[in-house]
Image (cartoon, rainbow, N blue to C red):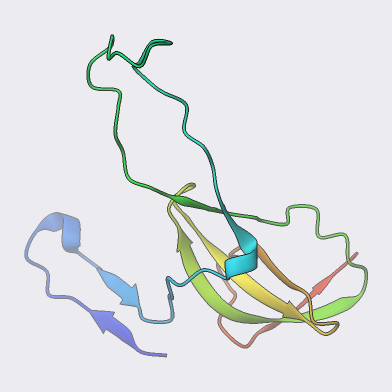
Length: 118
């Protein structure tokens, strides 16, 4: 787990630290492609509002916000950046073989153990 420190060239790059534990390959069964509506186009497909079309393709990650598993231990495998919410997410492997994404707690690192429940 290497941490890269960058030289300060401007005031915005002070204390610039990038952690190399972040991985960007999402788990295939936990992503889906959301259909974009035709922004800026009318029902015939003609552009009627400028500066609304286009955009980069983004894959949405299925994130478990409820965490309903009770007293089940899981291990953090990867920490990834989620481009849809400008936040980091963790891929967790549970003991029963299930894999889920959760929002990344600030204190958590790779190979930490997390338990769901009270």
